[in-house]
Length: 288
Image (cartoon, rainbow, N blue to C red; front, side, top):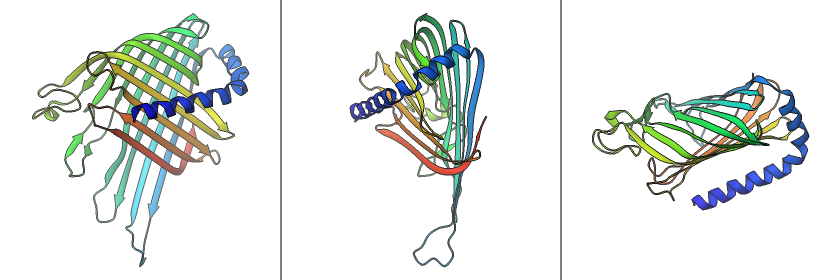
């Protein structure tokens, strides 16, 4: 299954790159030449869904759900130096009549990538990736299974960066340290998230490959692909940690858009299988 997903991701990425490269090459080169110093940009989206039923014979429960997404980039370029930073925040709730409200989405992720030019599009690099959730999570039995910083994942390491532009880059880090952090009450009676019983942290050393590609599929339709791979050297290196995310924003006008998010995660220490997340909604959109 992992091989199939990786093949599909590689195929889609290759197709997108070749389809868009000729069209965008001159624009990207001009942008690289002109833009120096700090540049920033982001997107805020509030997605809302609501259903109401009255004497509806087919049945149905009144429900309400909302989701907030923030995707913000802060980049720096000066001569031979480049520094790319990305913040992603997502939080969602749903309320069905007669039931307690439930969390439907919760994500906090920070990426930072520093590069010093080596030759052409290659840079010596150092990267940091941090991700966790902000609120308490409950399983199907109502038992707490996560909260802020439990679990939390931190990756950091040196490597080599291939960067065509801010919208197309791949970082390869063969000596990446990965830390899994969790509160001790999750490991009191056994292992949790790969952390051994009685401990609060697990350390791993391995290789990380991070790819990023964003393009406009057509006017007012942006497509963002983020792929993160991690292989542990000393503990089942064949079980590659996979995190692929697809974000599509289809603008209707300045403040309204249709947003689609798809994410597939494989981490055998957290769950024996793929974790999938998908959201589609019409909502308020603001670019800044």
